[in-house]
Image (tube, rainbow, N blue to C red; front, side, top):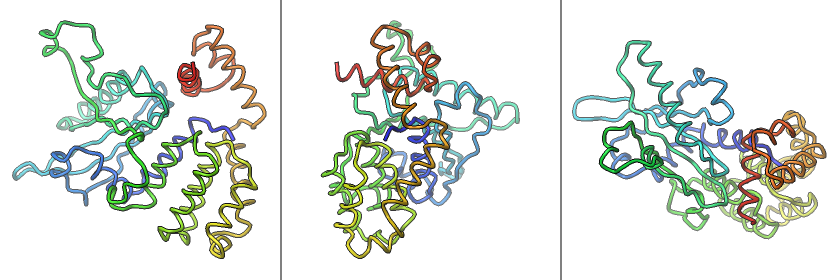
Length: 313
């Protein structure tokens, strides 16, 4: 079943707008020198209503506000999360513009400028090969860089994660399961799913039905799988607990998947046709912007398909 970029983003936000998940993730993913200065009990999610339309389809709209103690002073720190499922050459520009808009809000409100750390969460399959600094992406002499506007973003690449890292992320099964699914979207075959389902059962969260349902739905959305195979594995691995998770387990998951697909406004057949048209148009040399207009796919989805074509080529 095909998945649009909005479904990727929806899953990401459902995981990371959970306070415990975000705290456990930051404790592992942030540099130790930053972690030791953060008061994790102060974590809040900041409103991002000021994001304009030009950025709304790119940004995950997740800004985490927390406090850090510097001597006797308590200072607000903002972690700007940007989530990517493909290598986006525009990332530095997007992060720059988002930071500017946040600081502009501070200026208009006549308050001190906030501290902002850009953070890119990447779960694509190609290597992330974009400069980590703004000036690093410029073709300028080294001696001039110190005079130019610059920033550096933190990067977390799910390629560095696997479920064997049981001592990381606060042993948070929910978070680690989500990271595994994000890492292996489009590549988790049915046998890998069996291992994943077994991990969930052995971790003891089978009775957390909303969590289990969210994880299984995302797996189904992001991988080409047969309904009967998925249902059989769930029944085999969870045994009697399968019916305790939810009535008519498989049918409920797949029906919800269809309903959510309809909400996205693209029926599966039309979507697959648009994907095929997109591939053909890209291979013929049309620009991603033009392909997006022709197919009615989002530009992000077109760039994701272009990235997959480049990888396979």
